[in-house]
Amino acid sequence: MQFASHEMAQLTWLPERILQGNEKALSRLYSLLKLIARWYGAIALLIIIFILPAGYYFFNSNAAASSISWQLAWIWLIVAAAFNILLTPVFALLEGCGHVAQVARLRMLQNMGGSLVCWGMLASGSGLLAMPAMSTVMLLIGLCWLFIVYGKFFRALATTYLTTSKIDWKTEIWPLQWRIAISWLSGYFIFQFFVPVLFAYRGAIEAGQMGMSLSIVGAISTVAIAWVNTRAPQFGRLAAVRHFRELDSIFFRILKQSTVVIILGTISLLSIKLFLVRTDHPLDARILPLVPFILLLLTTVVNHIVFGLAIYLRSHKEEPFTLLSFVMAMLIAAASLLLTKHFGATGMMTAYFVLTVGIGFIWACWIFKTKRLEWQTTKKGEQIV
Image 1: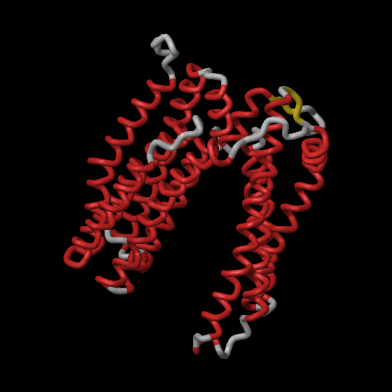
Image 2: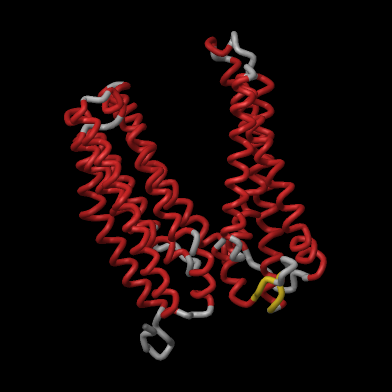
């Protein structure tokens, strides 16, 4: 998405959904399409070659699965998932080309269609086949949408523009790709680490409460960060042409709006939690106790700002948060292991909050300020404001 958005700084959409503009940018965009097709084609093939037989062996050797007919469902699910993987970068490329709303509408249509099929098959007693059927419907909707709505775009891109100017994976994409991979894996490790640690030290009840709380708070976070995520292609185009005044104006306005949204969301969740506590509602037992829940909410608000800063920085085709993400993952994991056994979820969330605010947030703001000043300074040393 970031690389497509930079090329779009020199391109415009025609009413018939064909791009026009700088031939070099069109050529680079086509080379990007070919590159991601090869990469994700290889990934899809590896999923079928390795994940399918590995899962088949795992379920086949599990005594609990011996009485369940899972073979067709598993094979079907993996094949459908592999083909869905192929479409993922194509949607990202279209988002980078500025069609964020169009892709969002498609995903809504996919989720609606897939859910309806899943519910229908579950109601009819199809069991495990509901999942691969849902994945297949989402795949077919995506393919039909690409063919009908953007068929002319892809045909024109493939037949008209030769790759005289190419995006080089090794020198352009890989330096950003591996850094984002480490940052993403670090974040994934943090959030997936809490539940198993609680399960190991405190049992299934506290682990379940943490899992439910993370899911609820994560939903609010996803809604709020959408304000910034949907503008990422625009940030990339503005960064490419060095329109920093406009970029900063839009970014800070959107970040403030999204922060208000997540604050209102966390206040709403806290109000619901207080109501459940005061009424002694049974659902209160499904989520974290009040103190760790509040700490989780506060940390989520702080993380939201950091996520927004990361989107801004990545729009420049760089990832300065790699070391920060890795160090924070290690610190939070270590603190969780040390505190959870004796203090449970309260100790874990206290460490999470203190480390995020005391180290992560301050470090992120310093990186943001430093890199922003570096990028917005001309060769003559004059800052662009």
